[in-house]
Each structure stands twice: as structure tokens, then as C-alpha cells.
Length: 173
Image (cartoon, rainbow, N blue to C red; front, side, top):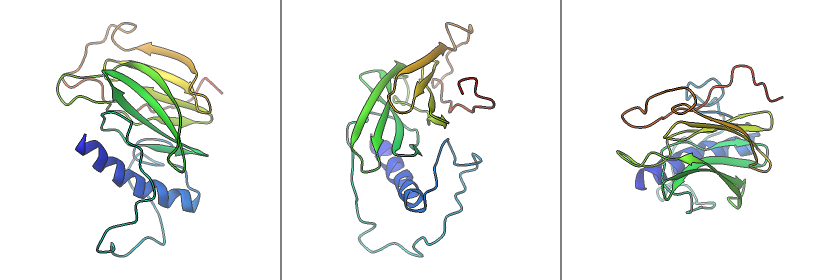
């Protein structure tokens, strides 16, 4: 849980600078998945007490993924009681909705391990036991889902599926 909070704090610094500049973060690693964000006007050094805490949300469960931001929503995956959920918060950290994705990995290093991907008004996510889902960004309503193990005869990796969906040509336009 401590690692999840540290990852979220780092991601929120990037996200809030993007909120201010109007840039969206739609997938793992940013615009080109390199982890490089071309921001300007950032602090040259941190204040002694660190940056001001604007808000926090403590009910995401366990996980290692990064949040993404689109329009008025922040999306992040979390594991609660062995189930993977996609959470939607507004830009002030207020809970909007959560949608069940599937069974989450709970063996070694339990917790969700996927960053959502947003294309147009759809959010794509994965869960540790192979569920891949497409949901409506505004409501969390599922459009479709498949399971990489059951539907494609895959095998569970040693540490569960840790995939962040890359959408090449979305069929759901």
C-alpha cells in the first residue's frame, strides 16, 4: 500500500501540472509512452516542507498502476478484496464511480498493475488474471470484455498480467 501511495503522489504531481496546462495524460507513460512530459514553468527546487497537498483519496485499494486524465476525470485502477476496479475521480479528487473489471492478482505483490488507456470517450483496462475491458468514460458502463486466459487460451504469467492497453485503431468510435 505504501508503494501505491508513493506512486500516486508522483503521478499526481505530473497530473496537476497537466491540469493547469490543459494537457491530458491518456495512457501509460504519457503521450508517446516514453515517460517524458514536456512541461514548462515547473519548480526548480522543492519547498523544504514539500509541495502543498491539494487533496487525497484513500479508497483505491492496492495497486501499482498510474492514473490518467481526460477532460474532467482522473482514472486509476485499484484492487479491493481480490477484485480489480476502475475508479473515476473528478479533478478535485471527488469519487465519481467505480466499475468492476475482474479478478485481480493476489499472489506475489498483490494489487492492480495496469494503467488505464483513454481513447475518445472510452477507457481500456486490464486485470491481473487476464480480463481486458472497454468502458464508457462518463459512466463506467462496460462496452465489452474478454479474458486472455479463458477466451484466448493464455497462461497466467508468474506475477499476473501487468499490461496497459495500447489502442492502435479503436473499433468503438
